[in-house]
Length: 275
Ligand code: HEC
Ligand code: HEC
Image (cartoon, rainbow, N blue to C red; front, side, top):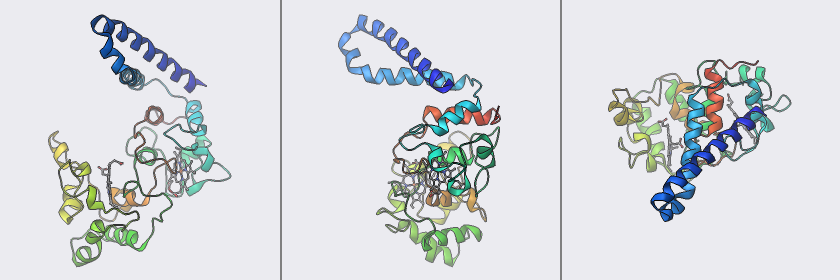
């Protein structure tokens, strides 16, 4: 209930702010305000959301329990507990209790108290499976998937095996399902046209440059590594081809930063407390 209450209060503020803007706007020109109506509403509601998120209001487990039980809480799709409960817990993950959330599933912990970013929870709700738009029912342990897994397990070497068996997969349509090839969207270190400045057409692109090398260099930061030798569970290249975004079946163009995700992350940052 607390969630719903805060949510509707936030909306209320949004409308109040909108009404204020319209009043000022009308004094200038009525027609331009009419045209921007929908857009302004979005901006104001967003601004209020941002304020609420940044204020870091204490989040109770009660609110998290409500989110886990609510359909469409993180984008269009069934509630998490529909598929992750004590009787039926896909991948061993029971999201219907606080203990279940803290315990995690067969692949380890779901949340690390105090650390919202970088955890399985955030990733599962934001990261689309690749190639973008692939059906979640496409298997993630095909021969080609295992070739990539094996290459990471064995040290991400730039050897004959890589050149002959691994690299060509990224420029082969349908190699990991669907009809596109990875290099349709990740072909160089420049964005546009290459999403996340990720170049999957060479060893250096994949291993040394990784993602966002240019954008991050401009901020004095190193690139985002997408592979780690011997550590597929840390390697985005592997995770992106093997893990489905949740809730299962969500469209790949659904907002990757919905308000409720920030609420969930704030709860984790605040220590993921059950009381
Ligand atoms: C319609 C069923 C369904 C819904 C709804 C669903 N999941 Fe899943 N979830 C699955 C299945 C099935 C898997 C096993 C892997 C796969 O097939 O993608 C899974 C796997 C996961 C994993 C990986 C666990 C691991 O460590 O391997 C996480 C995390 C996860 N789900 C979180 C969520 C969250 C959070 C929600 C709610 C936003 C959610 N799921 C909603 C079916 C669902
Ligand atoms: C139709 C375009 C498209 C195709 C095809 C595609 N990707 Fe992506 N990829 C994206 C977009 C867009 C993002 C970032 C947004 C997101 O997660 O949805 C992304 C993100 C990624 C990331 C994460 C980068 C980071 O900074 O964290 C990896 C890794 C990745 N893709 C690998 C692949 C692989 C491997 C393939 C082929 C199996 C592939 N992609 C195919 C569009 C695409």
